[in-house]
Image (cartoon, rainbow, N blue to C red; front, side, top):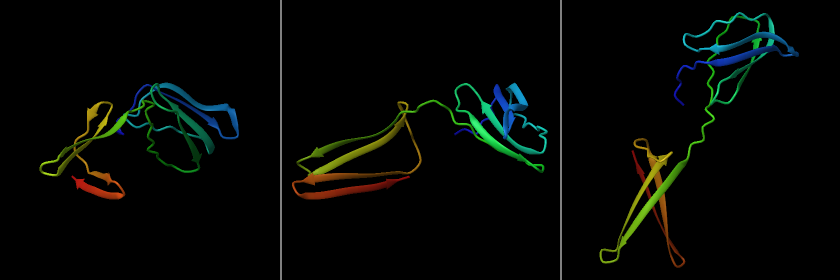
Length: 133
């Protein structure tokens, strides 16, 4: 989530009890600067739309002055991959494990990473858990 201002929004606000009663309809709307929209007393359903984002529906009860901060979600599907590689040195009896996280093919750096590597040797289980920051 970037919290970036959006432009080229489409908005349609209708009376909650009558979807044919359109109170506000506009295209090309921007969220920068923030918009003041006078709304008559009552309950209104407001739908914000933008290409590449899911529609945002907000129910507004207009009975006093108020402000809203709403966030739209992109419709882009991100591919996440948690991957590990392990190498065992039988002479030193040492196991080296490396793990990483990527999104859309790009390695993610920073943040906390927790990993548990489970090793089965017959009926015996060994676990290696590590936190890095």
